[in-house]
Amino acid sequence: MRTEIRSKLREVLMTSPSFLWLAALFALPTAFVFAIALRPANPFGGVGRGWTLDNLERLADPLYLDVVWRTLWISGLTTLICLSLAVPIGYVLARVSRKWRGICLMLIVIPFWTNFLIRVFAWKALLHPEGPVKRVLVGLGLAGPQTPLLYNPAAVILVSVYTFLPFTILPIYAAADKFDFQLLEAARDLGARPWRAFRTVFLPGIRRGLLTALLFVLIPSLGSYIIPDLVGGPNGEMLGNKIAQRVFVDRNLPEAGALSVVLILAVLAPLVVALFLERKKEKPEAILR
Amino acid sequence: MRRSRFPFIVTVAALLFLYLPILVLVVNSFNASRFGGGWRGFSLVWYIRLFHEPAIWQAARTTLIIALSATAVSVILGTTAALALHRYSKSRLQRAHFALIYMPLVMPEILMGISLLMLFVSAGLPLGLGTIFLAHVTFCLSFVAMVVLARLQDFDESVIEASRDLGAGGWTTFRKIRLPLLWPGILAGGLLAFTLSVDDFVITFFVAGPGSTTLPIRIYSMIKHGSPPLINALSTILLVLTFAAVALSQRLSRPKTKEAA
Image (cartoon, rainbow over all chains, first blue to last red):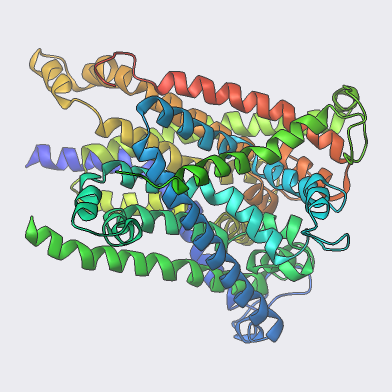
């Protein structure tokens, strides 16, 4: 009995530094966002007294609804493109020789280690009206001299795919690595065409990796701020930009809080769905085992 | 069986896609032309200019001070967290603990930035180096804990038991067996924390206040209203430093004995 108490005490002692730190600087501030969203703003850029629903009502502004909608479709499209690129890449990585696999993984991870701002800036320079991409496209006749490559949603999607692609490839590769490729051959032997074998055997086989990859792109993409800020222009603004504008431009923390609540909900939705899917799928499998 | 070439083509194209912008940036840092429109000959002028920008060096110093202190604290907190999670993995407290450590990993940066800003403003804390430090420890902690935990889970626990059987006490076992085995994990976690801290822009931007400028904040204002060639040169220097750090971390995290591989 005494050793049990001592063991518990030691556990609490070991847990409390990180637990208390994160409770105070992660859990508490997140709760704060909800609280401040219900407070009025004061004219000095701070938070006033009393409670109000004004900030939440202001979200119904068509301007905000536009931004929310744009945030959703830009993130959705980015996720879709990332996944459809990452699946064939993950497949290749799982099938090539050990040596090549190591080299390829290294090559995929290295750009992710470079400063994020610099990667976005590099694209800004590439897509510049006098930049190399524009000249090649005009030279090929694929773009007119006036076609803008920067400051639109397409530029945001392009740079987002660039930024999040490594995060998608890694979990899909990890899942593909565990996949039994003999299953694919069996499907082919049984007469399935390549595409069908791929769709009905390979994709379900790497389901878990796909789900992780999806969350790894979708969530940060929903919260994107720098990418639309630097290459999006006014037509490419996302929720993150609106939050930053309320904070830095007109210093209205409660309204920024209300917008953040929307973002938190947008982020939580796919997470909860993913958790639910995992649970549902897990049970029958566990029984079979 | 004939395999489709398609996945292979996608992979090669994706690698080109990943490296094209970085390559252009590095090449342009040696370009004498101011706007990077065309090649005007090889030049080191932007690197020389960079050395005469005191603001950049000041920002680099601030970044380094914050990164080093945040790394030190987050390594300590993250390692104890991982040890607790590993040792008492079945307890209810650790499940809450794990959730608390895991959540910051999936939280978009901007939400973390704004929530910390709101906390600091409400608590009346003046924004500056102190608040940046607090924020950095908060997001580094989870990453360190995860890296160290992964290392702990790869452990051969029989080594620990052997040490106990041979009469070593808990503390001796920890110091002589567990810590040396854990060391690569702690180093890798620390290196990751350091890189994340040096790299972070969004969270820092929210909690920095007007006075304190880190390197990413400096780079951001240079992108917004500065000269592109200087950023190219600075980026190239940072790239070289990052590659060196990655190579180092690869060497550290690689298992020393062949049997582990």
